[in-house]
Length: 265
Image (cartoon, rainbow, N blue to C red):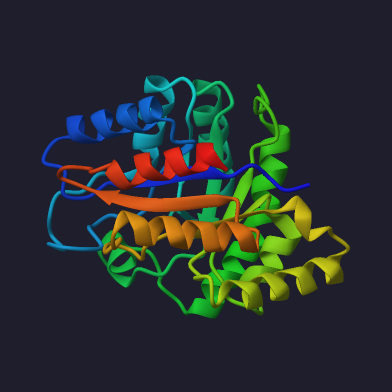
């Protein structure tokens, strides 16, 4: 049975001169029918002025949990390197309670060298960061099971990335959701590799919700192009479609168009 299509917006916590602009953007997302509001876990802007205004991920998620009542929230994605796994589990449990069971725990191995360098984390290599993530995931699950009070429910775990040897294996072993940056041309191959990893660990790949970013990181193209991309990906089995929006203005017109398209499916 096909999953219902959902629309997410990544409200990139950059270039907002004051936090009120982000608070307003989350409210507008909820009011317009967006299913999930994501932010990201970086310490500096990724686009535009690299030294421009920027806000921190998890304190923001706690504020969103208190501010909103329907929309799901999460990081796309939280960097495993920045927090002890047990602490991250406790943070996720707490934010989930604040939001009455609406957190998605997005996590990845990390990649932005400036974040590591300026905040004093060891960068290592792509392989070592993925190995660290592999070691952290069982610790996160174990700590979630020990916390008092426990989480409101089993918190969905989202893993982002498309590395075929390690990342997709971790998705098969641990994730409820997989976020890919693949387009309609490259997605079928990535999904097939994930299905192979699922077979190797004895898991039905249909138990994993597939997510994809639309329109690239910053240049979305026209609304018609976005809708065509959304239609192509959804026909391939992607049920969660995510579009980015950045400060200072947080334009949501494309997200609103996607919500209207979703409702017509």
